[in-house]
Each structure stands twice: as structure tokens, then as C-alpha cells.
Length: 287
Ligand code: PLP
Figure 1 (spheres, rainbow, N blue to C red):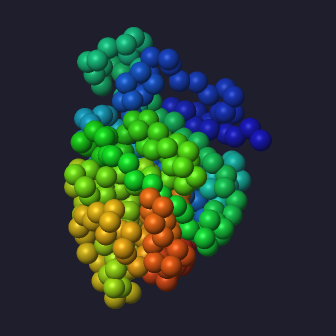
Figure 2 (figure 1 turned 120 degrees about the vertical axis):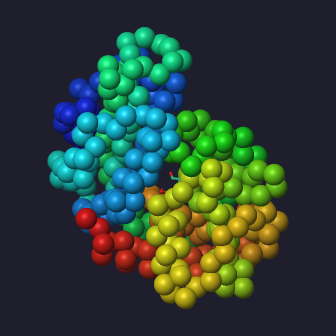
């Protein structure tokens, strides 16, 4: 099926949508993005994603696209036009195209940002069978840049991490810096020990996950103990449970780390419960 996508104010068939070869996201990875999930035709955690987008733009001194205030309407229209019941909306803003290649940022008065959105239909996203058996991860060195709190389109290393995991028959990689886990290639990482949920504290070392914020809020509301601090791979392998969170996988149990089973090698009760609560509450508050 040909999707309808959004490019700089226009809704177009995907085959007709065009961006300049001089666009700075293409030449310099000078762009930021957001992924919002759709469940039951509703947008999940939309306000959080919009707030993080604004922050990413500010941190990079990138202009807001003209249509910034219309983003909710644009998301909703794409859901409608493409008949999305379960899936995702990808949004990207770049610093635009100055019609040539230059390291210097173009004058924002002259060059406007490029705004692109498209949908990805994923029927069965909430009832993902993978969540019932959990995923296996490997660990690799975190050699990304130092501003991982900004959601930029520089995704080559995370992509290489996923490929390294695949080569070893695993699903994903956890990134390790100075002996401590930062996060997954495209998710935040957690362990559970003695009922306590442990996840790395927020800093420029990790992306401030929108799902992370919601899951930690629900966990605290459910009287679960949460500790925000770094942990090692050895500590994770010795934990009772492990899991990851992201907008597209929600809460996903991790059952093996570098070949060592976590707990009994099956999804644990805390991850299962948090997945249930997250799905229930976020569907309820979807817009
Ligand atoms: N960490 C990284 C590196 C990510 O790429 C992502 C999502 O893409 C996350 C964490 C999870 O963030 P969110 O819950 O907002 O999807």
C-alpha cells in the first residue's frame, strides 16, 4: 500500500515525497527525530514526545518548523489517512537545505527546517509475542558522542550494535561506558533486584526516554521501589530480572545478557506487570 506522508506542509503519496540531496540531515546528520506509537488509533505519550522534540531543537539551536504548533493535528491526520490502528509515527526535523554542502549552519532567516512525518503500520504491536518470551542482548562498548540526551538522527553506531547482536543470534545490544551500562541501542535499560527497579540516572549520557518517565511514574504509583543509578553487566547478569523500554516496544523483558540467563531465563513478574500497567494507562490517556 502506498502511504500518505507529510513533507513541509504537504500530504503526498510516499512515491512523490522529495527532500533535497543538500538537506543537512542527509549530509551532516543535522537532524532530530521522534517516534510516537499509535494504539487503537490514538497517540501514546504525545505531549512527552513533543516536549522532547522542542528540547532537542533548542539544544542544537535549530529553528522550530513553522508547523510546530500543528504537529498534533498532522499526526492525527496521518493516522486517519493511512488507517493506522497500531503502529508508529516517525517525525524528523532537519536544519534544512542551503543548496550546497557547508559545515557552517545556514542562516535560519533564509533556510527553513525540513519537516517530514510518516506512519508505520504494526498490527499486533501491543500484543507482541516477543514480550512473552523476552529478548537476548549482548554488550558492546558505548562509543557514541557525548550528547545522547539529544535525539539526533546519528544512528549508525546503534544500527551497528543491532547488527552485532544479530550476528550472535541475539536481539539487541546494551552499551557500556566505563564499565557501566548506559542504555540499549534504541531503548532504556533496567534491572530488578530484590524487588527494586534499577535504571541509569538521567544525564547527557542517555536519552531521556518518554516511556522511561511514564514507566517509572507508574512503578512509583504502584509502590514499587525505584533507584536511578548506573549498573554493570555483571550486576545485570546476577539480577532477578532485566528489561528495556521504548515507545515502540513499551516494556520488553530481557532474559539473557552476554549468554548468561537473567533469573530463570524467562520474563519476570515486575517487567510483565509494568508492561500491563503501561499499556493499560497509556491507552487510557492516548489522544
Ligand atoms: N534510548 C535510546 C538510545 C533510544 O533511541 C530510545 C528510543 O528510540 C530510547 C532510549 C527510548 O526512548 P523513548 O521511550 O522515548 O522511545
